[in-house]
Image 1 (spheres, rainbow, N blue to C red):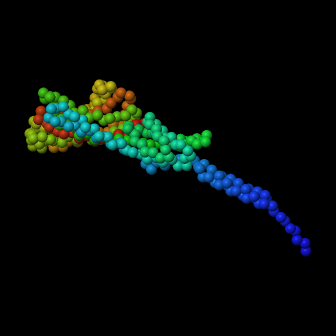
Image 2: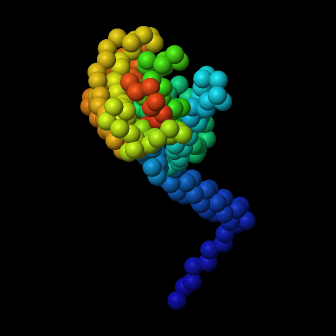
Image 3: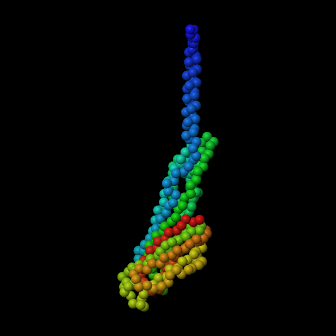
Length: 264
């Protein structure tokens, strides 16, 4: 039997090693590319939020109330998935941010399209998610006064509408507050009274009125529910409640709570 002898030079060995190293590098590169080439998406754990508006009227006895307003905005969290490179966020409310993740609050109720744009090496990916923001209002007004009194004034409650088509659901409650006899103890000629008027305004001037409630009552608390559907609000238009009483000795503290849907 004859045996074939082969000899491998040092140069050949070096060539094989180099080829193996090059091949390994190429495989690693392909694996990394496949991992990062997934579709860009946005992880938003919550897409609905409720902003809180609170206003308290404070009267130091000079009949000149001070409005103390507190607003608590819902904070949304956004995380980009499969982003590659720089991520730019556009919240469609005039604000932007950068980073793989971000938090954001919207000042006004509405529907917002949040967009993430990821760009690297000439490649651009875009993903979007819709966010809905509604608002709840809570107003504690100073005591009502009779419109026929020397200090005649109404209690006006701004419902803080936003531009667009929106709906309201709420309640205004007047509670007896003062040193005079309670509503339950008054005689028929002194019955407590409240008038609730819905007013639409344009640039601050009242343009229309609708009486929601106008009656007397003999309890220490009277509530008037209200619901307005599909109100179309334009720029400069406002919506407010006006509370009045015809009884000179009426002293009631109004509290108004409402919820406003996101304008369409």
